Amino acid sequence: MPYVFPADLADEIRARWQSYAAHQAAPPLPSPAPLRHILETAFFASFEREEGRAPRFVLCCAATPSVPRDGDEGNVPFLPLNERRPLSVESIRALAPAVSPKNAAVLVHCPAGSDDASECVITGILHIGGDFGRARSGRSLYHRSAPFALTIDVRDAGELHVYQGGIKLAAIKAGRLQDQVAFSSLEFLPITDILARGERQLAARVTPPAHEPPRDSSDFEWTALLATILAVVNGVKEHGHGGMLLLVAPGSEATLPVRLKYDVEPDVRILSERFTAFLNARHAFADAQWRRRANEHDAPDAVTQSALSSAVLEAEVELGDAVDLIAQLSAVDGALVVGADLRVLGFGAEIVLDAAAAVTAYEAGGHWGFSGPRVPVDSHSFGMRHRSALRCVSVSDSTAAFVVSQDGTVSFFWKLGQEVLLKRNVNTANPSMVGGW
Image 1: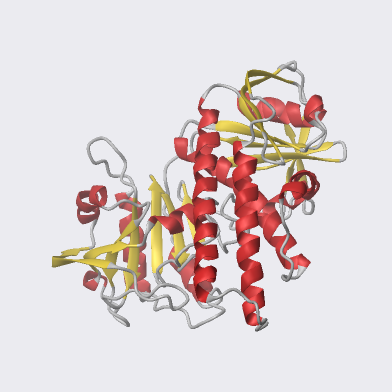
Image 2 (image 1 turned 90 degrees about the vertical axis):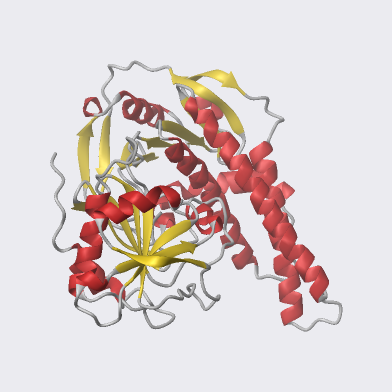
């Protein structure tokens, strides 16, 4: 299919620009002509090749040399160039290999109010920091804020993701605008019961805060559990080979029609242990904050508070490392099987069902998956990995499947009653962050 640049992308961004900046005035947005020039240049640069590889880069567009972080957290560190470069496909192709999209961006200066696209020039490199990228993928719930400016993340040929600060406004893939769900957690409400069973299994190892309202800590735990699962899915995406994650509620493992090539000792719980250590560190810190705000006479002092905060960050880094370890297991043929309590059951799983047997599934519409139109789909219209996921979910109890295609898109399968539902191209970004990854 030929790539077609959507002429209304700039208009779409302009229409959404003010509505997404709820807590403060929106940052400056380039005028229509410069905005279109920036988007078109990024789009056409995405098809270039440098030493046989497609460029992967991030542009940050601002009207001033200093770019603030979202939420008044100071300015983003900046490496200026003595000689400004015109914003062109050639300039991006030459500079992109030197600017890692994991922690940096090419800074494009766009004078405020100017309608002259030629005044948009490359002035330097922003050091955004790697923690924000890790947070988007679910590996971190604490992070420094994104640049409070227009940011364009180019991930593949014809694939652009446009942000205002940390909020995704629009995405384009294969020349088509993509639907955007503001919070990824809305995609996965159908598996609330599966996650709840996982939470109950983990509860014995978690010390809840004594002072924070139970609803606050419970909401945090649910979000953190979903974020950890999605971080594993995103780890599979980053490896680029595709894969499948089967998520099963504790107690339903025996219903899975799988043969594990590599099963894991049940007492080894690296991921779940790192997760509960993170929750306990976070709850201790939250309790200390509540006691200080209440001016209790025995509230922790500043030194203790700092130590508790450092313990949370250290526990989060260790959890992220465990996520990377588990996600890599999907590199072998077969599915990765994980319990909703984050216990790894095994990997290289073969689904032992008749591949020729047809299973009727319904493609769910709407942002919540339960509502909206359901379109019947024939299982034979899918590839082998998707057919296997569909068949597995259809016969298993309390099981969901995430299928990652080699192009990075994720399909989500679950069961509602006796019906198997699926949703394609789901948003797997950190559920605590607005906008997609």
